[in-house]
Image (cartoon, rainbow, N blue to C red; front, side, top):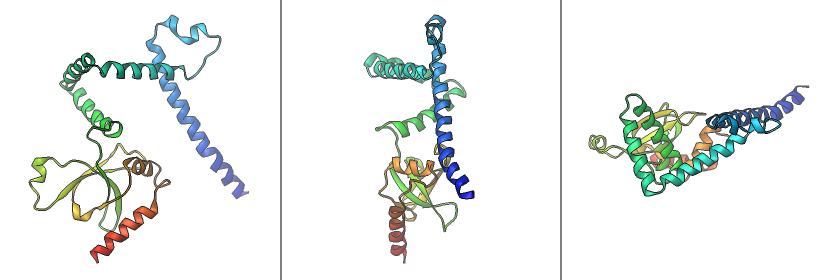
Length: 209
């Protein structure tokens, strides 16, 4: 009986979580319909409620915003608006932090993660996935040898984590893309590539010997 119960859970747990996430996402996007005048709401002229129509509006708003910002006038207007927002106390600091994260994850030419590394964390006998970022010039000049800046994300939320400066000699550079590393962290290792990680770790340890 136990094996049947486990089999049933293996079917329903991921299915239930997927449905819950989709329902939450669709419900959130449907809130964008509140921006429309009441007589434009689909519920006012459709015979029944159709979930997910907010996705179309959200997509249209995002696409239109991208089209406007891509031209010269839109870029200047947004630059002035963004500059004004950054000077608003508290709001500016939140916006700046969120923008840096979004630029890192979404922009191909922003201040993105440069490499995926293995670093010793949380103790000298453990390894953790980390992303190499940029070391400020006034910080790098303080070191006698080469150090790299790394961001160690937490699982399963990669937007939180720890920022450290570590010796480059104490890191292992992986042949792993940032996307794969993020999926590995979010899935808590379910989609990890243990062969690649193990091979790099063994090579590094052999060089130390």
